[in-house]
Image (tube, rainbow, N blue to C red):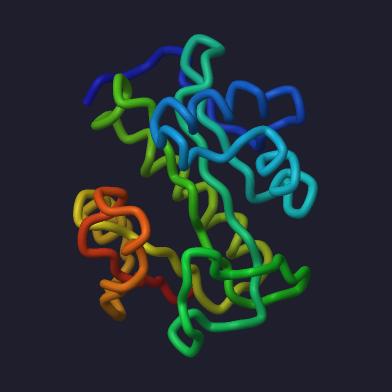
Length: 171
């Protein structure tokens, strides 16, 4: 694993959102969150908007939201959870994005660990997420377990995520 002398993880700031949008659109193409969507996510729950920087360049990001619904008991759609619920006890992690040039060096794991720390501080019951075939091993290494297949989920976006599953970690 490559060691970066200047790798920094921190909570996003408003001035990071333009770079976060560019990274998301470079990685996810038209499905990447635009600046308006990122501003909304940042405004709703800034504690759970984490970024990774190498040499002051944004190379990774991840978001979380709180829900009052356990995803295993809900009908999951591409927009679950539909809203952020301050005080919710279910932390839903999404949007893990790492620049392809920096993958395989633990940056994604570091971002997820920071999100887990936020969820623990808020006394959440579970952290839940949707993972595809390629990202599942990362989440399994961190202690997440697959709960149910979601084959219907990405039907509108073939190629976005192969074999999506709901994963969770009890806290």
